[in-house]
Length: 265
Image (cartoon, rainbow, N blue to C red; front, side):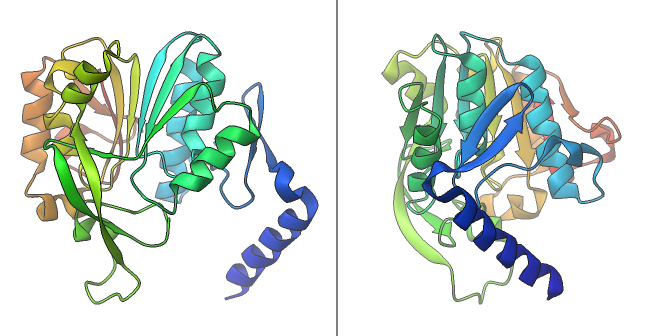
């Protein structure tokens, strides 16, 4: 209760302090800005005991260490643009970023964060979800929070929760999207789709056989709702001739699935 009150007080203070200029945030050598309440986790949390904060910080550090000017990056599950802004800074004016975000409440904040940093022309924002099918599907969401998903199981919580929204969104297969838009194969993909990750990978067989490096967040608790399993993930990776390992070196794939990011390379 006290922690929640402190968080609300800090948020109000920041809004008064930064207003429409956005909260300044340092990512490596980059000085970026985010709408108050939407900034990413700080890199110092890479050693946190909180698994979510630690996972996010490790992903951000990986991209800082590896993405280069002029590259193409796909941000699948863009949310508020926490990573899209970073990717735009990393690839520079000669690179390209495509951010997929189907949540109608999250997408305006994604666009606002891009605009705060002058990156609107560097990032294409797509309003579709990514899976192994094409056509409209129901999205389950909670007013723009980070857990919108193509299956109710992706939200966590109780099936009886009364704050869940349901509405149709367009869904694409990544291979089909790349062909249709004549996009060159990306150098990196960040894939965070709240349980639909195996489905998304199944729809990206051609992309997987390119030289792309994928950082994929796993949500095993939601897989049953998508009809997928850990074995399905391993088969997709094996069929593409790739390897898979947890981003956190303390975790091992042969120990089974758990929440966290893996690198498919």
